[in-house]
Length: 295
Image: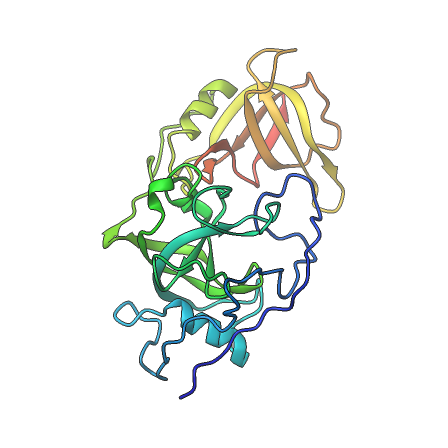
C-alpha cells in the first residue's frame, strides 16, 4: 500500500478574535490552517500504514499517520461531527497557538494551555506530520505551559477522533496514559454542600472538585448579585452572574446561565440553587441550569 500524502494549502490564517490563544471554535475555522512545514516534507511520516494493522482499539491504538491518512482519504469526521471514540498513541511535540507565528509551535516555548501536538517520533519537528489534542478537563496536567517537562512524553489517549485545528485530532478525552501511567485528574469527585452557603464558601467548595466533576447534591448559595457577566437572554431564558457575600463588594462566585434573571440587577439579594463544579479544573462555579429566588 502506498503511503498516503498529506498536503496543506499555503495560506495565512487571520486572527479573528483578540484573546484566542489556541485553536478553539470560532465559527470560521479554516479547513487547512497555515502550516509552515519543515524542510519541504509535506507528506508526514514515510512509514507504510498497513490496513487493519491498527484499529483504534486499546491493544492496537492509532498513530498520527493513521489520522493523516484518514484526512487524506476522506474518512476523518469533520470538526464537531465525530462521535466514535478510539485510542491514539503518540508523543507530545508542541501545541497549536492561533496567535503565534508560526502557529504550529514545536517545543514548549509559546505553547498554550488548551491543546498539544502529537507526532509519531518524540524528536520530530515536521509540522506536516502532527495531530492535535483538545485537552479539555486534562488541560491542567497535560498542557506545556504549566508542565513543560511533558514535552517528548508518550501519550495514549481515548477520545473522539475528528478534525481539530484543521488536522486529525482527538477531543473529549475519557482516559489518558502518559509514559504508561494513567493520568489522574487532581481534586475530589464530590464535595459536601448545604442549603445556606455564602458565595465565598461555595467557591471554596467547588474549587476542591476535579475538572468535569459536579457535586452530587444541589447547593443553595445566598448572597448579592455583584456583577452581570452575561445579560439576560430571552431566547434561552437565563443569565450569568457573579455573587458576593456582602452588598457592594467584588464578585466571589460565578453562576453560569441560571434560569430566569430578566429583572435581576446588581445589589439584589438572592438564593441560587444548583450543582457546584470546577470548570476545566480552574474555574469554581455553579453549573448551568441552576435556579434562584429573590430574598
